Picture 1 (cartoon, rainbow, N blue to C red):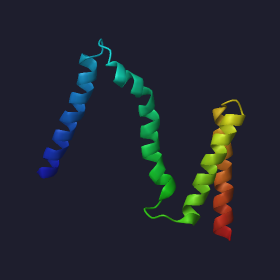
Picture 2 (spheres, one colour):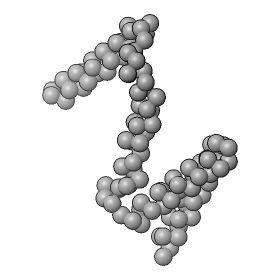
Picture 3 (cartoon, rainbow, N blue to C red):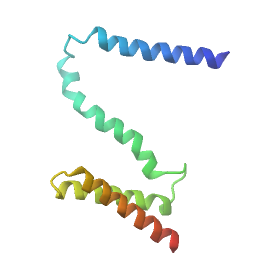
Picture 4 (cartoon, helix red, strand yellow):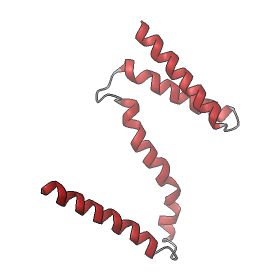
Length: 107
């Protein structure tokens, strides 16, 4: 019963947050908030992805972390050097991740 109550409260909270944005859609946020809003997306993305890079299976391990970190660096460099061409960056990073994972597992 406690689980059902928890889900109901979380659902109501989620609905209330979405309804608040719909009700205040015609109003502009204050200037300090508006100035910081462009940083929210990258901050959330970093908060979601960084733990997957540092501790992919719940513990820090160089063998499991190195391919992802190297692939992220290569993807970023490819994105910057290829005129911000996202497919080249993604496929380049993925290829580096595969090759590095294979090399470390084979060793």
